[in-house]
View (cartoon, one colour):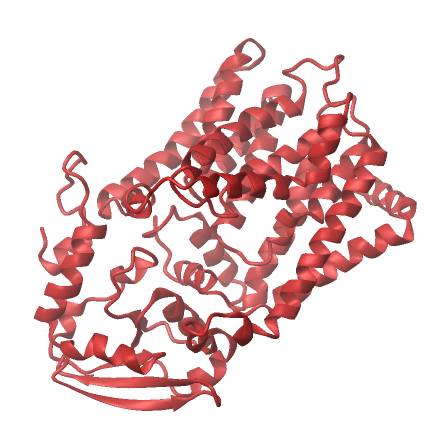
Length: 512
């Protein structure tokens, strides 16, 4: 950032009122407090394990978040370091929204700054406290859209290369990016007379290479991503009208009810002097609407996650550039007050985790909130197992042990560990397994000739159990666990292409 930009930001800061400055500073401090105080989540730990096992892809999703965490780990293996990526991503996204808006010369830079600030203190930005695949997805998507806009308007080959790179990485972050890419392609075809078609073809080629990389990984890894995202996750679909209402309400909340109300009221958000092609708002509508429509259709049969529409709602903040600065200042205050309130509630809730979580789940909490105490009881640098990917990933990180694995899980989630274990090679051996509830011992006892159960008292309310199982019965485990896993998660429909030696899981356990 050059000195003129720094001086411009300094001048803008001086124009803020004391309450506005206080809200902005409070938001940043509360967000940092969440980054520091929020216990490591299971999904977050799961993605960190991806970064420790660099690969062309992973079971659940395309690989970009694993790649990002791998490069971060080269600097330091620290939770706050990993989370700093999410924190600075939100700042960069806000800046990119500012830059995207100012591609329209008729919009004042001060207006663009207010839009960026309104986003920066929004509930969307507040969610950027952990580095997960959605964090990486939104960052690469907004980078891709920004350079796409620059490329088609300025016809710069450098911007074209950057657009292709980041749009490809967005696809390799999560499949939701595909709908944004379809929208951008539709935009380019709609305005094809204004676009350098050679540069468009280069961007399409670069994205196609990312798609090809993902297809190659899937074809040689049991079609993992495809089966998980389009089959396993949708097998329990059923119509529920309340899901539709929840989805619509979620979009209204993420985009800010006040901002949407101002858009409805505003007579300025369509500037007649700006052609549709030259207006960044046209571009973001093309990029955002396809995903929102698809998720609306999905909501008729499935619950839509809060993080699913993040690409679209982030880009749609550009629409607020048509509001007056007075309206934007009120939107900034509204978002800041709301987000700060949510942050305070979350911080207070962290102190009452045991009281807020249902009694049936309370015994799991210590894995995440008292991990150091749990690790004291566990084997150091030797293999042990848990019963789920969340506890496995969290303890692998906190205990500094890369040899923690998952035992007897038939869940569709978090099956990356299937690549890292070979139960066939463990036949007849003794295995160490951590369980968080005594009744779980009955789940694993059939697979051993004998078991020794050792209670681990974590605190007055929580006791875990460390099981030493002797004589692991692989044949029974294969019949009752691995066969079910193979049928549900590693067997593609008959119409899928069959690739020789294309599924390591089947080859390892003789299911081919």
